[in-house]
Length: 262
Image 1: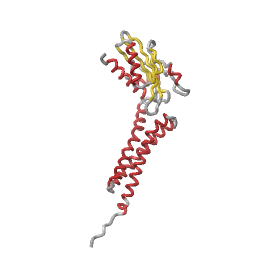
Image 2: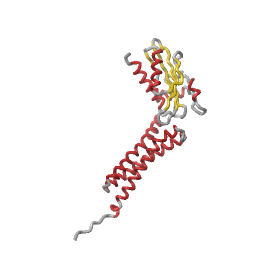
Image 3: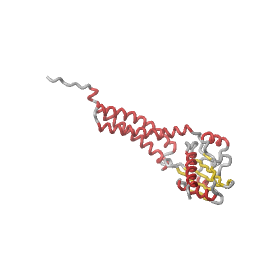
Image 4: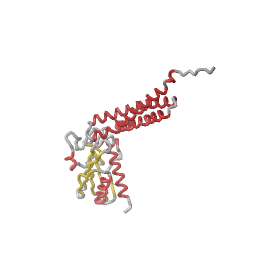
C-alpha cells in the first residue's frame, strides 16, 4: 500500500498567498512610482499646488518602502511555491519600490544638508542687480533685493567655492562667451546689453518647472575681465542647492569655452 502524501494546510495555500502578495507588491510599487514621477509635472501644469506636489512625493516615498517590503515577501513566497511568473511580477514591484523612494529621499537629504537660502551670488558685497526680470516676477514671489551680510555668511559657509570669475580675455570676448553659455544651458535671455556688460535670463528647472532668475555682470579687471553671476529662485525658502549648482555648471562651461583653442 502506497502511503498517502500529507500536505500541511499552510503549504496548500502557498500559491494563493504568493499570487496575492506578489501582485499587491507590484501594484503598490507602480502606484508609488507614478506618484513620484507625476508630482513635478502635475505642479508644472498647475494641476496641483506646490504643497500638494510635495505631499505626493512624501506619499510616494512611503509607498515605495511599503512596496519593497511587500514585493520582497511576494518574491520569497513565489519562489517557495515555484511560481516563476509570480516571482518576476514580485521582482518588478521590488525594483519599483526604490524608484519611488530614492529620489524623494535624496531631495530631502539634500534639503537638510544646505542652508535655507535661495539667492546665490559670486559677489556678495555688491551683487549684480536684477532689472529686466523684475517685470516677470509675480506678487508673493521672493524679494529681488539681496538680503545682505547674513545671507552672505550662510552662502560662504555652505558654498565657499562660489567666487568671482577672472579671465585673461577682454570683456567683449568674455561677454560673448557668457551669452553663448547661457543659451547652451537653455536659459531664456531676457536682456542682453554688451555695452553695459549685463545679461539677464530665466532658468527653468526640469522636473517642477521652477523659475529662477539669473543676472551676469562683465567688467574690465586690469588687463583682463571679471565676471560675476547671481542666481535666485522666485519661490521657496530653500533652493536645495540648485542655484549654486547652476553657477558651478556655468563656470565650468565658460572656462571650457574660453580655454578652447581658436
